[in-house]
Length: 200
Image (cartoon, rainbow, N blue to C red; front, side):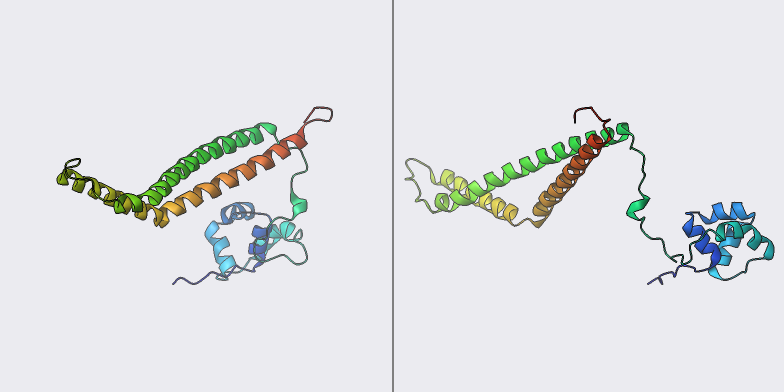
């Protein structure tokens, strides 16, 4: 089992994480190679005076206690300008379209389940019914009909106990609900971006 890597606490690593830089990007700023940056972060090499001088302008901007791991942005870090409505509308269209498609699939599964339940209800009576006189239904035909009912009963029981079918239903439902929730949030966001005086 591979060991979980421990985030580097070196100054180079702190600067890189705080400013969201890849090793290659910071290497370009410092005028050194990416492997050199990796070696410094891993503790295999140390900063030279020249590299430290180039790093200092960024290092001085670090807060007093820089987290050693990436943290989620604070709520205050969200953009303050209105979002582009075109992007929101495109995503809204996508969410609504796919939610409708998923709901149609769910309706088909639900309709199939209703039919299966109907068969579950009537099969015991059909199988227990007394056989018709042979003058009305030849024995071979009666046997064939009974085998058909038994096969239908097996299919019904199998579907009612099919955990994969149940999982598919719930996955479709959850995906549809997630898209509908996102669509509702997008509608609200779009309404909030309308200029004052425009009816919402």
